[in-house]
Image (cartoon, rainbow, N blue to C red; front, side, top):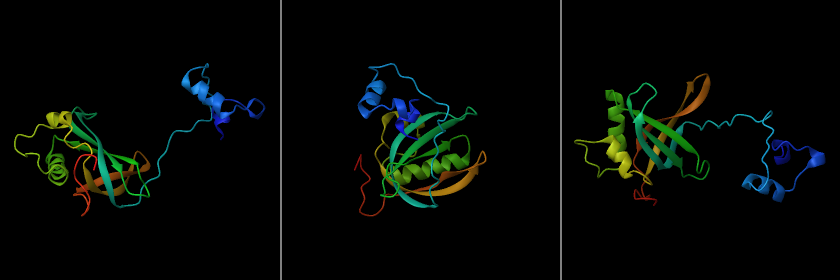
Length: 165
């Protein structure tokens, strides 16, 4: 599908890139033909260990109302560079608490573990830009294969664990 097809213009009405850019920027009236637009999909990564950086970290509630930390990992290796994976730490059970502890020990080792406040930690942004290695597996979720972060490991030897390093 060409950009012209996406914007609802056939071959006879084809637009050059400048006109499409003008429409996107708001200088024209944007009209899209979404009839043939497909839902975005992502290639499932092979099981393995990937270099990654913490791109975002938030604290909130899960869909069930439980306290949860969400980490967005951005892959830094060549093959899947800038691909993002989401990692969820539900903190209402021992499994989630042990996972967030492992995250802290391996990614932000200077973070005190006693009296840990996940909300304050998320708001402080201490983890943003930190490097690590993540062990990724695949699993079936709602009928589709998805990636799942199984384990967070320290950054590779020779790598940095500092902000945006």
